[in-house]
Amino acid sequence: MRLFGFKGVNGYEGVGALSKGGQDNFIDICATDSLIPNSIQEIIQSQSHLDRVGAAIANSKAITGKLNTITFKAPIERPGKIVCMGLNYADHAKEGGNARPQYPSFFMRGPSSMTAHLSPIVRPKVSDKLDYEAELAFVVGKKARHLTLENALDCVAGYSIFNDGSIRDYQRKTTQWTIGKNFDQTGAFGPWLVTPDELPPGCHGLNIQSRLNGQVMQNANTKDFLWGVAETIVLISECMTLEPGDVVITGTPAGVGYARTPPVFMKPGDICEIEIESIGVLRNTIADE
Image (cartoon, rainbow, N blue to C red; front, side):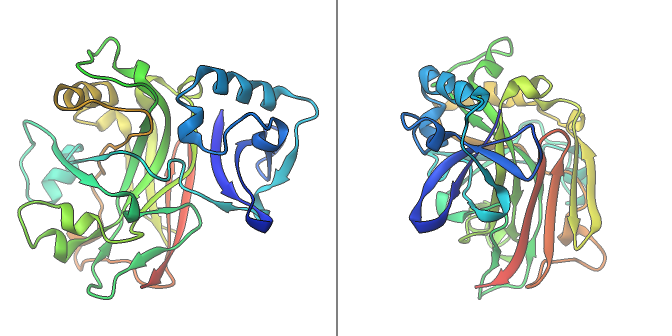
C-alpha cells in the first residue's frame, strides 16, 4: 500500500491510496469507508484499521479522485519524535572532513520543521545557506524497546522520503546540529508512506538521488549505509522507547551543496527533487520566508 494524507475542497481531509490503475488516480479510502480515520498515524496503530484500508483498496466501488486536485500533507503530521541520523554514508562523512564514525550522530527535529510534498521548502530571513539532503525515512508502527537485529524490522509501518533541508551557517554555530536542522518548513517529507511488503527488507539496495533544477547532485544506494535500518532501530531502542508515528531519518550520501566548490545552496524559485527507487519522488519548490 502507498498511503498519503491530503486536503481536498471545502476543508475536507482524508487519506488516499495510490491506485494501480494509473499514477494520476487515487482511492479515497476514508470516503470509501467512513470508519477509517483520516490520519495515517491512527491507521497504523490498529490492525483492524489496516484491514479496512486493504478492503477499501480492493473494493470495486471504491471512491476515487485525481492527484492534481488535492494538497498533500506530510505522511505523519505530528510525530512524537523525529530522530535523525548524520554521517550514515562514509562518502558524506569524508566530504565534510569527518572520519568514518564509530557510532552514528543522532539529532532531533520538531514537527514545525516539516513541509509536505509539493509545498515549499522555506529559506529563512536570517540565512541564504539552505542546503538539500536526500534521505530515506521510516515510520514506526509499534511500541518498541530493546529490539534485536532479528525483530527490529517488525516495528516498521512503512517507508518514505525526506529532504533534510539544513541551514548550514546555523548548523555550525554550535557543536550540536539541532539549531540548523529545525527552521520552520525546511524538512520535506513525503509524498506517501509505502508499506514494507512492497519493498526489500530494510529498503536495502535502493538507489537514492537528489536533483536541483534537474541536475543530479547526489546519487547513491542504500546498500552503502554504515548502519542499515535494522541496526539503526537496535541502536535507538537501546536508548528510548519508539512509539507509533515516530519518524526516523537515516542520513544522506555525498554531494551536498556546502561541500561543493563553489558551494551550492538552494534559492527561491529552485525545484528540488529527491527520488528513491521503488518509493517515488518528493518534489518541492524553494520560497523565501
